[in-house]
Image (tube, rainbow, N blue to C red; front, top):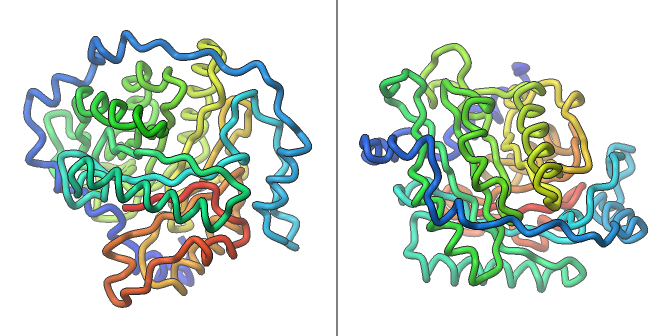
Length: 345
């Protein structure tokens, strides 16, 4: 991370406020769920991908719309057309993020189910009105592996959530036709170690994946003591794993969402693989005032393009100093490029 960018990173260092908030959930019973999924989930069969070919004219037009008049030549990015059934760029995703064991890690765990889903529907409706040309899909973005301040028995500083909690999120998503994202904060573990444990869920057509470099500490540090990092190899493992699942199970493309709010959180971005089976979102994950967040989006999302972009909004941290400090849909639609994924914490 260059010194000139450090002040922005420092101002955004307390992203998810989840390092110790799940420590009370670290019982042996929860740890025992690490290696096998519930019977109910195992019985769910993935639906085959649609055979309808991508409308390339409409696809190119939507990419142009997302580029929003960019004159730098960076947007829209050029990559292979996705497999049939691709969600992006034809839709926008509006997601609630969190963990059911914590009221501090996001709106998903902060509010009771019915109140939370009602609030999500309200946010979805705001986006439908702001951009009526782009359908909006709700999503529940669940932190399935949480970084921990305590090292745990294996010293990895991470806690895997019990699978019955993931089942709960999937069941909540069904009545509202929502997508589900499973997110991992690997601590001292790795993407390669944690991803395969979620395969029973990632085989489902409506379940997608998120990886968080902020909490990836490769040299034994405690999560939260510094901002972590993923390199292109870390991210490409997830890309390859998801692509393999898509091919073997005849699924529509998977979405891989990568959090980012500093230069060092994602290295070698130009080496990240772009394949028809996986659609990659780099999500601007910082909190702060609008000027700072806009600057962060410009530096690390717009100037280092991959495929699609996201923008994270914090109900509390963005409005701490200014009750109007959280971006509106109309304001976010002015960004270059326009985000395809909006996440609320």
